[in-house]
Structure formats: C-alpha cells, structure tokens
Image 1 (cartoon, rainbow, N blue to C red):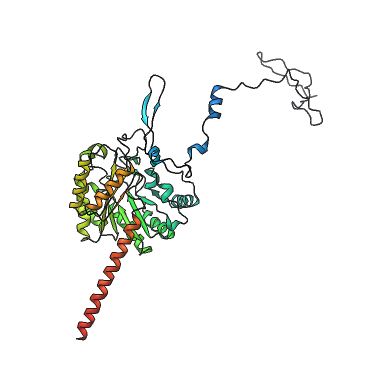
Image 2: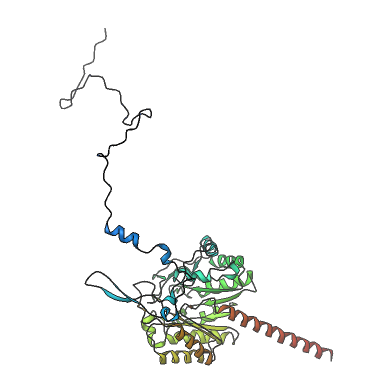
Length: 411
C-alpha cells in the first residue's frame, strides 16, 4: 500500500479555506431587466453657469477674426492707428494694434494646399513659410499653379546667422546639404510650368564656398529642364567672397538679387554683425560687372525700423552708384516678441512717395507698399516683360548682323 506524502505548510501562511467558491456574477444587469428612471431627488443638479462662460459665449466668434472683404472701412478710419492696454492689473502697457492695411486673409484655398503638398513631398522649403510672409495667401493663390509664385529656399531651413528681424531658425552647425535638392527643385518647378521663379537660401558660413556651388548647380538644373523659365536668385553675401558671387552670377540666371535690408546707419542693429552695408554693395556691384550689364540687379529695404528720410536718400544714391536696377520697399513686421520692435507703421501714402522718388532717381522698377517683400510677385511681371524685351532685341540685333554678313559674303 502506497504511503501518503505529508503535507507541508508555512507557519506564517493563512489557513486554507475548504469552502466552495461562489460562482462569479456579472456586475452589469442583463438586457432583459427594465431600466429604472432615477427619481428627481436622486438627480444631481447641473453645474451653475460661470462668469467666464458668459463672457466667452458673448464674445467674438471665429468669423470676427476672418477679414470680410465686403466690410470696407472709410479711408480716414482705416489709416488711423489704434492702441490697447494689455497685461495684468497694475502692470498694463500700451501697444499699437496692427493697422487695417496690414491685415491679410487666412490662406485656405485649394491651390495653396496643392503647392504645399508638392513642396513637402520633395522635401523642399520656402522662405514664404520660414519667414512667415504675410503675402503667402496671395502668392500661392490663383486659379492654377502657373499663376502662383513660391520662393524656394535652398540649403535647408537653418541659417548660420541671427539677424534681429528674421524668424528663420539659426544654428552654428546646420545639417549637411541635401545632394538631391538641385534635381528635386528643378523637377518641381518644371512640373508647375512657371514662367518666373525666385530662389533664395539661408546663409551657410559653415561651408567653404558658402553654398555657392549648390546654388549654381540648382540654377543650371532648372535651365536644363525648363530653358525658357526666368530665374531670380536672392543670395547672401558669401562673407564678402566675390569669387562665389561670380560663380552664381555665371550660372545662367536672369536676375541677381541681394538685400541691403536697411540703411547703413541701422545695419549693425538690424542685421547680423557679419553683414555690412558696404559688403552688400560690393556683392551687387560684382554681379553687374560679371554679367557686363546683362543681369538685372535687385535689392530690398524695410521701412519702419527707425530710419530717417535723409538716410533713405543716401541709401538710394549708393545703390544707384553700383547700377542697381530694381528696389523694393516694404513694412517691417515683427515676427515674434524675441525680435526687434516696430518703430513705426508707415502709411501707404509714404510708400507711394518713395516709389516715385526711386523711379525719378533712375531705377528701372520699384515695388513699394506695406506688404511688398523682396520676392513679391507684383514686380515679377514687370521684370519678366523687361527680360523678354531684351531677349527679343538681342535676337533682332543678331539676325540683322547675320544678314549683313551674308550680304557682304555675296559681294
């Protein structure tokens, strides 16, 4: 007979219960049971309305923040600057509200979404987005892509300089260049079928050539895929290396743009300390000399930074000395609270005054207005027509010269 093994149990353990376990009953009631309505006494009273809720419900709706084109203000009222007190009690400060002429519609049309999708699909960046341009709904709008303008920003979205007016990201060591970017950029632009395109870039002082070779390669790729497309290049100063300026100027572009941004006296406070007004003038002069006058040179000046009228006159005189063809004036708008403050909101009438003054000084074209930017499409139609006229005139001269040579050979 097999012996029964002794049962061992820990002295500190609980005694084992021999009673059978009760079957587990579901906590929820069955569907067959009737639902009982809670009595009026069991119901919890609703939360009382708060003062905040009342203020929120009686406040402005979403439509109040979207500009209504049909509700036009009188001219005198629209040009009037409004102020407001902001901040906690006891620490309130007065600020100037954004004038009516600087308010733009929210970008939300189908063409805007298509262009943005194309850019993200090819990993391309635009200065329109990075610099928070107020004209993005206008330039990216239109009925088709051919009527739109997008300023492509090459060499990434991170700059090695830190200008006090610019919202582009900064770093001493940005990511390396994308070797496929020139090909992708040319492919995207040829796909859109644009007649005029603007290329710009961040400053890359970490590169030996400042990115000039990358810029020039992109322009050459665009010209290979779309020979009739007109290309404007808005470049940096390449730390004063004029050989790099020459490399870009000889790449086949049509318009060489470089912005002085402000008057000479304010340059140290507005731009990065590595950029100077005289250095920018040398860049514009070199681009004109290399092309032997073939290229159109272009620059841009922001107003509202605290410049004086005499300083603006002097800046325009210096630009004419280096044969700059096109100048644009626009209102400086503070991107964030970390950037320098707006000194003054310049009225549209003043912008029109400086436009006329620039034309009287001999500039080929001047775009001037509160929302005008260096790559604003308002000036591109005019520049495009000028370039086409020059091309047709060159073709006429060439054909006449060919005919005269043929006649001389017969004689």
